[in-house]
Image 1 (cartoon, helix red, strand yellow):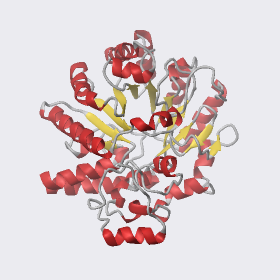
Image 2 (cartoon, helix red, strand yellow):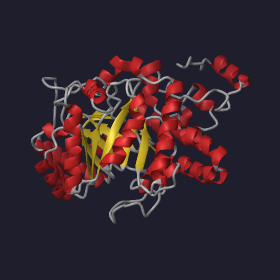
Image 3 (cartoon, one colour):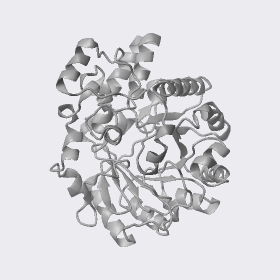
Length: 416
């Protein structure tokens, strides 16, 4: 995650303690502020169910109704939560499918909170009634992330169900009324970039402080709309819009938590922009980016996933590669076993990454970005991230280095 509010606008945001090793950012007394990003325990995304009441065209795990599944029972899930608590994970994110379709969700959340786990719900928001919002508040859920992909019909087209936008807005308002910390999750595509300014107007009108803009990852059903992914020029344009709008909110006196997700190149773009606008601030931002390490300390390190079959993955988009299964071994045991070649490589990616990423002068801050996107595009997890929109000149890849990559057999033709 690239925290625009923190890096570009200098605001203190709730995740600074784990994202940048900074105290005083709403961490609990029991939270361990890591000395190094590489030493973080993973935030665990748990796809607790595959059932879903929507039909999102970009669903990363192909959720829906009537699909094969090996979900954990209530008692099995509690055993997993016991392990995650003992392992010291900073947060468990209950996702799906649509987690609110799982009848025992609140029982599991109550159990998780009782074991000292910070809990988050990732939902489409359409099922959050006033009563459910009050229950979420009473249970002590730390945050509810509600997915939207545009305003009105744009959102409904992606969600596959007419009325989904209005139902989600109702869920947002119910959470706010109940005092639940709530924010939005949005996936950027060619179909909704024109809605970004309108979305910021929506944030302002609805009093929404937190929003995460995800770059598309073509996993699950997302692979079927890969042509809707942004071009590099469109990526640059939308990041400019997000930066401008976030700064405007700060100038208005709004405390925000605006982030981009799944492309650590955004941090480099922001840093390069600050080098021109405010070099001293750029220097401070560089220290934060390199402490975090970008992709180096993300997938397989600071984030992991348990899917609805019990399979463990390096993140929620690695559904095609399984590290282990919690029905057979505990998550903690699976996570600490580096005999798996992918897990080992993700934690030592300097020794594995190829092509322009290997020679990029910003590697310490970006860390090669998202390895799963490289694997899905090039069939090689160590190839460059095809979503990198910086030019060869911008990353310091002059002709001599390009020739070296050709000689080494590491030249990958990047999309535009």
